[in-house]
Length: 589
Image 1 (tube, rainbow, N blue to C red):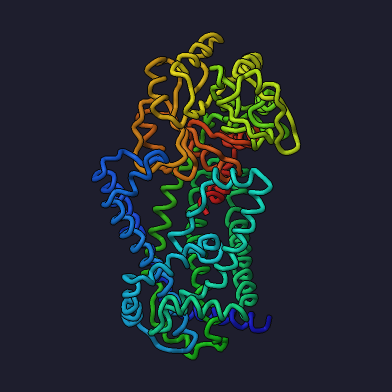
Image 2: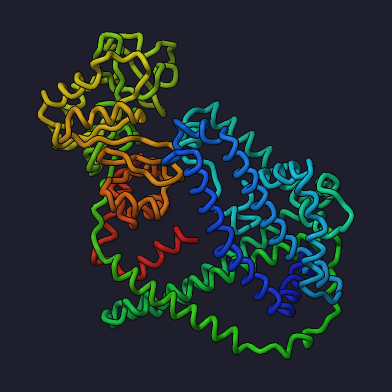
């Protein structure tokens, strides 16, 4: 612990002494990111869509898209650009830390040139090792190595939820995740070794990191954990202190609350950006100190930077603060509304019930869901059964295939989930109960390839029989069938389900159901212009629900309709601005 304390003190000391260097470096990184990386990525994507003739990329066409020669070349160029950005961003910080810890004078241009000399490895087979290295670090990147381009990268939630739905899946996921995290930690020093040592390859750097971590792994993990904990506590403390005046003003001077809230949010946004940058600098200092065993303070005195003036920095900070404040005031003023986002219960209410059952439907209605989503398939006798999977294996423990069984056979079976059991229901059963409960259904048609030719007219006739054509919704991942259904019954609300989407969407349907990982601000605005409703699935944590309810998307599909309803209620006109700020900070940072 004594050495750990020395390393932490040295890191703080160096960052303070060279504070102007870090301000310049992080400013350049952010400018480069927003003025080059993000626009270039967007331009390349639009160019790929135009050249290939695709309107947008989905799970149905992505294989054809990525195998196009032009797309393959562009993807390789984007990967190379991403790798170079990470290399220069972190490499610069590692080199600065190395020189500072040894008391060596440095200038930015020589550091840049040193990094340039090793770019040759990015045009060789060894770049594959760097790709593997960064892939291993992805599970750690959001909390151990906060690179500006990796913080939002994660597995889509619907994939992890499917994996975690069974005991075997959970065990496999835990085992694979543990192995990846362990390998990632043991290889985490690859980049600092590669950037600092002038004549070492990527592969040799990886091997050195692996050998070093045999003896220093525990110490490194402890230090990084201490850094993260201190960072989070500092963020919490600053948030409490900064929002206390707003807490008082909202209760004593409500008329000044909007302006105060805008100023408070702007201040916290700027502080959090600074703290994240400091955390990145601290990580680089600690990793270099541990790798090269330099616990002694640098020899250069802080006086070498005394001639630097604070006025330009203060002026720029003041301008940024004013701009952010005005933007936040405008945004917060617009957010004073009661959102009309529909709460859609995913497969009914699965807490305490089996999915897609009558009991789950009743519980979802009692929880206050506006719509209840159910999955239907056509049986061998042409009827509609309420069931999600193609087989009975997961819920009934049998090998039967839904498409090969009759409705009467299926209704005799008992299905099990999370310690609960129930019977399989028909579409007629669910519609009758839903009508009695006065709640509408979102019916998802699962297409297995053995449907009758008149599957759509049969479904329409069923809905017409119960007089729900004007109030129910129907969706499917089969876009062609949904387009046909819309033409068949123009007054029925029809939508297409996407697990993946990149690019603009111009579908001739009433709504789009899209997995949350692919929903962007631009897409939300585009769909509002058409207008086309947007249902986002499947949102099961408070942060995601809060995000999309505040964005006022048309609907959120969730396993927790009661939680979603409560979060929507909180967005009423009576909610304090302080709560709005805290909600926004939760999903921004």
